[in-house]
Length: 598
Image (tube, rainbow, N blue to C red; front, side, top):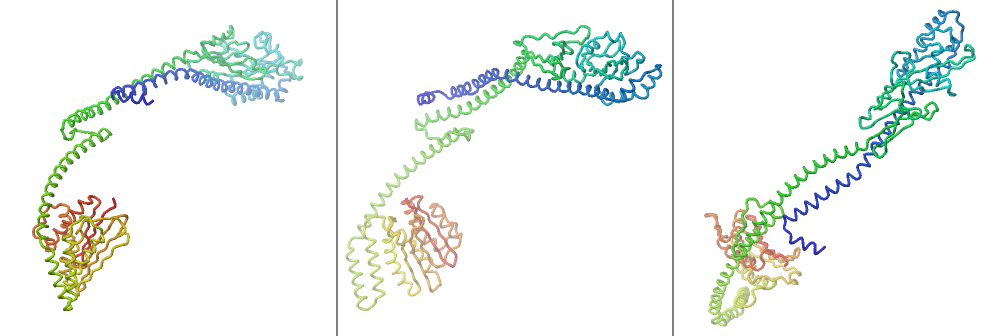
């Protein structure tokens, strides 16, 4: 698998897309078509046979119900005592018979016809020569005894027989008719004769249902050893009944359904013959549609793949050529009309950002080199000035000590304390060492400075210094003289101009969320929002100028000190350093320095 992936890494994107198209689209479509052809034939056959079976079951049930309705009518007529009494009377002349028929028997038979529309005719054949032939009644004479229905009924041992043709006396008997024959026996009849009740049924509704199967299926209704009563490819005639010859099951699906289980339905069946080639034709039609859809989808997929490939190719090619130029020290961004928002677009944007960062890095390195040279020059100058300042430090300290002894002898205690603090400050300033010191060391130096300021303000100035224990225990280091200029600005520009007799300055250091937080707060004159914004803007943009007429005295004096602190802290801590000013005019100023933990 690993070797295959390594091999694919060496294949061009165009060929990879062609492989995806062939293996991911063409092969599944062809395989799906083959599988579909293999299984669909069986599914179609099962669907067709199931449909025909359901249809034939319904048709057989309707035929059975229709026949059973005729049998029920025949049983009702046979059980009608009044009809039997009327037919058992002896008639001296035809007029008496006609009178009974017209006023009584005719209405009873018409009632059955009206209530059952599928019954075409009801005829009762009476073995009585004195009867006359009228609508529903016929004399069972010698001519009638020669007919097929009589021969079938008289030789049958059953009281019910289904005759597969019409028994209506007419020049051209109607088709699609069957006759239910019922033997009527009664000891009251003349000579104990057997009469025959014929109920002719119309099968038009049954035939219509069988015709719904369409041209693809040949449907047949058969009786008596597969004699054809009706068929889609057959015309029903009583003179020459044909036998159904079933075709080979290799070419046709053959389905049959028995009409009913009663003896008078003996050998009545419904046959459905479906040509197997119809399934193949349906498959070809469906397959044609599938091929058309497949070809359309393939054309669409080819267009989409070509569009995607072209979109990727021209951008990757442009990126590849530009990277060669970068290898030749051409550090310029890749300019495209539309690099896109996809992964390739992000890659181009990242590449352009990298080129921009490289250019900026080159500029920064160049500036750092220049700054390094400038710093070296400044260090040389500082060392020279430092050597000048240390020509005779003992002379300065001896002079201050002499003044200190004089003040002590004269009991000038406050002045003695101030001179002592000043001596220590000068000694600290002249002492060389590391530029980074602890917070405690910086605060000790500030405390000596505040002692001098307190002497200057007299009894109108108080200060408090608080260092949290965790600050002393931490390893946070800050640049030397990084807090003192801010404290000096607070005293000189915030408290000195205040008219309040209770001037106060507080200096705190604590650890908050793993960050060192140093706060310098005074209750001096304060500044408005515009002055604060201008100071912050000047800190972040050292070259920016303050609008003429808006620069205050405090800004003139404090700008250099705060800028010095801001730049030194930024050089040491970069983005870990945060600086903020909270000030309200007439209420005081709070400056917060925050250094996040590395």
